[in-house]
Image (cartoon, rainbow, N blue to C red; front, side, top):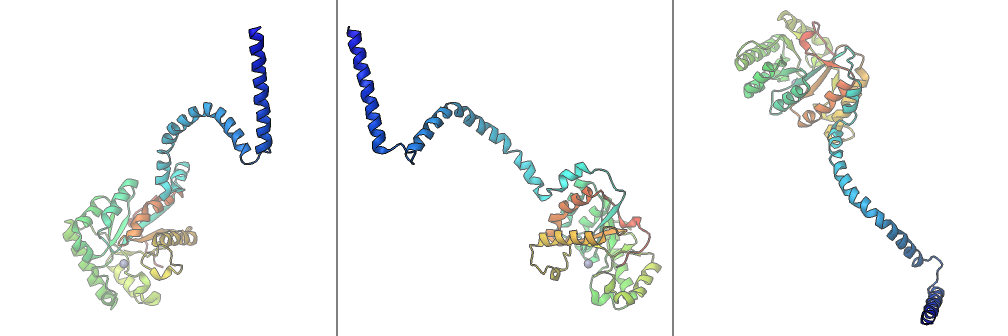
Length: 304
Ligand SMILES: [Zn+2]
């Protein structure tokens, strides 16, 4: 009996609770309003939560392993496309590009040499004699690491060197002696670049006598076709950040001259931004299937 009464009592309480719930529902509404729904969501979330702590604890452990991976992919941001394509396209096209650095050696040149070493490529340095005098150790390093120490005159002073071919040759000879003193032997090969480019030597019609004089002295001369335009600030009409302007110039000149042979890239390592985009450009050229040569492999002048 006691059990019966107590059971009935429980049943009564259940009914009471149920009625209360109904009343509460009527009072506060169960229309799925903003206050009703979140409770359901909370409940279902609560159910999920029992499973989710596992996920939650797994996520942090998964996340750290994911954080280091973004970092390697973050580093190639400097050369996002180049790195993968380099692996995809390792087959050389048999074509060569000649990277040349003008106006050094300067304080940035050791970094250039480090970059070239990292990629195991050789380049030509059209050096200025007075800069060699200031940085003899760097000049020596250029030669010792198998790069070509080429001539860009002693003074790079256009008002002096372009007075006449004799003045030009005199300046070139001074460069040669300076390099000999710095390097300890006659490392300067007979390859040169006119300061300002060959048209600076009396224009395209007037440069012939300079070219002739240099031929007689045994030199081969080189202008360029690919360029960062790093020595041509006026070309940056859109006022782009320098690295962007250099990269754009490189891409633009490449699109114009890509079928030209030889393909000669001029860079002034006197500009820090040029040095900073160098790896990106090298990787792009590698991805395009190029190999890297020294202008000493070429027997004919290349003038613009
Ligand atoms: Zn120059």
